[in-house]
Length: 114
Length: 111
Image (cartoon, rainbow over all chains, first blue to last red):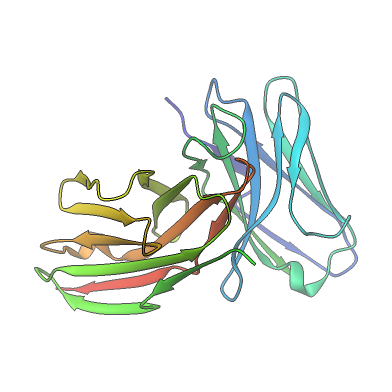
């Protein structure tokens, strides 16, 4: 069974640009969550999508948005990039909505903003 | 405010040593506690604990939860270099809507 796939693996962008990250969950998983990981803050929850609807949202500005498609694949978009957006962005999928079942993470997209 | 604190922040041991990693928490409406291992890339799931005093075990790794004292420990016996990683603790708090993550313990196992 294939794991969670995130593309691209690495991205370098400049301030002010926008970026789109992609995540394909494990087959059969309908929940996709996104996290930002930085050394000082650890894992910070961005949002969760289930059945194409955003079910939960963390404390990030509106520049961070996402969506989920009918095949459960998800994309995350960050507009007007800032230096502080440099981080590892992790996607996680699970069979159930919410966090009562363990999350399965992808390898992440390393975003560097210069 | 909900919080999860892991200790120590980092640890260096020799192969064959036994290590104990700690995770303490203060959250509302505790549902479960999870341990993950992260080796530079994707965190991989280790254990989920919901009941106090029941040990979960997988090979050389084991974990136990104390809901009265609000902490969990992760034990690794006979450590190997492949155990070198960051170990993350997360607590499922509230109404199944979010995980509160600790900053992790960075474990280095030297040959």
